[in-house]
Image (cartoon, rainbow, N blue to C red):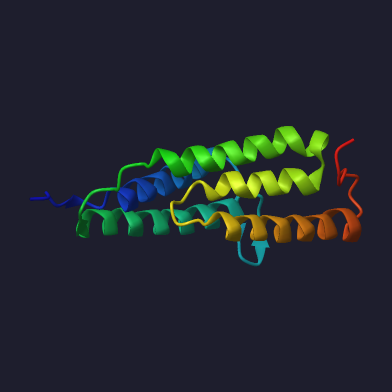
Length: 149
């Protein structure tokens, strides 16, 4: 039997927004606010902080009132696959070129799910790699090597 508890995601998100809004209000307390027709330097930061405070209070209240089963546990496979793919791209883009680094990145990122199929993944990786080369090297003219040096 599962135990119901508060919606922790919404509660923590709401408390985070309230904390950011409170910090903004404290940081801008010495700035002149003015009014809508004659805004001072503290007007917009305070307006945004109050709006953020409202959203924070909404999410905090929703988190306290909405009951649901707890947060799903973190799965290590997707987390590691995505972090590894970004890291490998950063380390190989300069040496292997954009075309090969993009293919390797997509294949590594596909390991985040068990639903991926190798043939589809390779086809998508090649297509995405070609699109990246067209966009970044040909259209935008960025000095990124396409192939290994």
